[in-house]
Length: 403
Image (cartoon, rainbow, N blue to C red; front, side, top):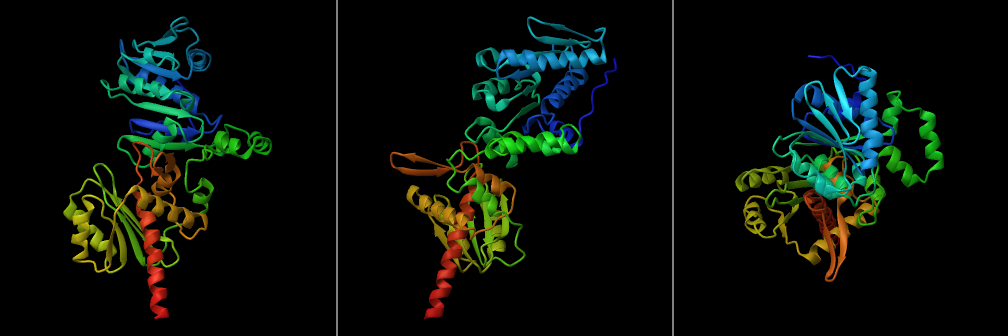
């Protein structure tokens, strides 16, 4: 086999791009090495795992960008490694590079998504994904079905109302075969890829929300989140060491999670557990073990009713809560109030992710609160139930003292 020497990535860049999971979403700062690193990744896939007739795709928002950036950089990289083109050649009109083993790396634009259907692709990269339409992602995903090939979805952060942000939150939440990574400008500075002075200059000159998106990979608040992104950030705290005095429990429906969240007497999350894919008997046993004799509000909607009845036979302070459009609105408004005043504290991770992507919409019949399609809000509901349970517990204690 021919030998090809390629520039080595820095560690965090390598860990993100070479994650073993199939679908990897990388929200990254400008100039953090995401494009160069994924070009190397795609080339290595074609070089090591390809063969005659195998197709590998690089997809950019428009055709001209695929040509000027992806195609041009790939040729430059190969020319430096093999200037005499003994192990590769390219086609300027059709935008492909063919390697010694017969693999072809194609460079395509996402602006005509219909042209992306049909072929069996062995690996792909969608570059500047937040500037590509969701139709292009759907088309590229379909080309990977027969081969079960991997894909890297990369780009700058661009708000919250786009398919990449929602897909990233799905991956960050632990969806099977998916992974999420973030590369910031300071990661690139630490690796010697980007001068610190350049980043600090951008920080001084650019509007804060622009700098956070382009250099820190932090999306701006699009106004659809009922809790406020900054307020959520201000409530982050490690798990409390104190014993929980009340719980909120959201029960799984279909592919959702059962979530149990316990709060201590100061409103800090002390228990935060979730699971799915187990039978109801096991779920009831686990809730009983966690809640014990403490007060708990448990989702009793639909199939939750008999579960609550089973729990009440063992746990003396279980109370059911039925979700409806009105009751959910009141519940979420209570959680929003607690978050805005920092009366509740919770750990970073999947729970924060659910809070970040949670959204509300004004409809003809009122306000609808939910997670984006394909995402989960079980943790948000459990936390909201726990906050209400804490308020009820405090009120009961106060009334008892007065009596």
